[in-house]
Amino acid sequence: DISWLVPRLKLLDVSIYDVDHKRHLLHFSEISVSLNWSESIKNMRPELGDIFVFGMDLQVERQQTGEILVQGVEISGSNEVDASAPERLMSLFSDSSLYLVDSTIHWLDYKNNSQRLDFANVNLTMINNKPGHKIAIDMELPAAYGRHIQLMADFEGEINNPHAWQGRAYVSVENLQLDSWLNDYWEFIEFPGAGQLTADAWISFKNFSIESVSLNLQADDLVLYHLDDDVKSWKLEHISALMKWLRTDDGMKIDIRDLEMQRNNAKWLQKSAVALQIHDHRKFKLTTNYARLDDIVYFAGIADELMPEFSFSALNVVDERSVVGDLYDVTFSIDIDRPEDLVAHAYFRDFGYQSVSDVP
Image 1 (cartoon, one colour):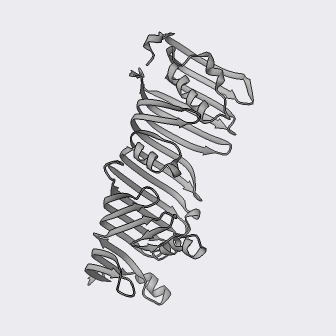
Image 2 (cartoon, helix red, strand yellow):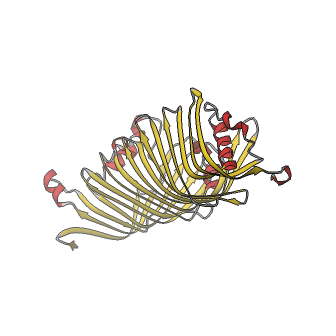
Image 3 (spheres, helix red, strand yellow):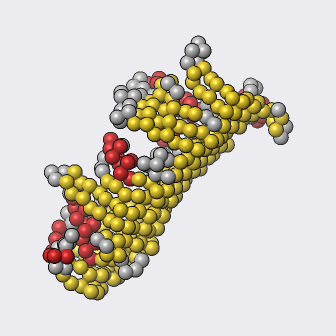
């Protein structure tokens, strides 16, 4: 048919087989393909325009040896030709726009105990308008992994060369079950934990490097395990905050607003604002209008365990299990190479000691 003077081919109940007509590859309830007039005239041959695919059922597998198969066809491997397959696949849509509507993706991971995940109501949009590109993904998660995830990206660069992309992205996750992701995909994430996370993140990136992140998060029942000579765990009942992370020439800046926290059934008396500056991985400056002393020492203990190259032993004078109190207008700075120049300033309130019988 003709849509806005553009020729369009619409097919219903489509099945695709291999060249021998022996293996069934794909099935769509509907596919619609239009012609890209400008590219067709420029290249003197028919070029695809908008591609709409409805009701696709796609199976993606990861083999024991690590190869990725889509509908039984390998798109990654150890040799150079196979490894370039994803880039070649992306280049097919370099001048087209793809819309995947109401589809289902089945993930079979034979490298991870033959795990099967079914992603329902998958919607994908990829709009290409050189030099810019827009990608949006929206789908429901398996119940054990969360509720919903959404990703949108707006960037420039060759579509088949992700390392040259420059732009921004938005990621939204709802009720993400951290224990399933952290435990099932240990090889990528490399630390175990648990909790429920809902978050919105705005990310800017350049050449496959993240430059800044703005985050709105809420998490409950967080647990982090540190597997070393013995097993240690840290728990946080609730945390919510607005956060911005920014890469600088010699380090990073972290700005946190509306921070609320609860640990050991003790909720912070007020929302807090926190600013952290790190220079050359050796100099730290922390300022905040409010914090609980025992929580500061608690998190410093986590950092001391996970980053042994940075010693926070200066806080050992405070017993994290016994000293409590509220801090206001806190300033703390330290140069790891010159610990004697440590600067600390704060106003105390309700300062005291917790009895041993009160310690959980």
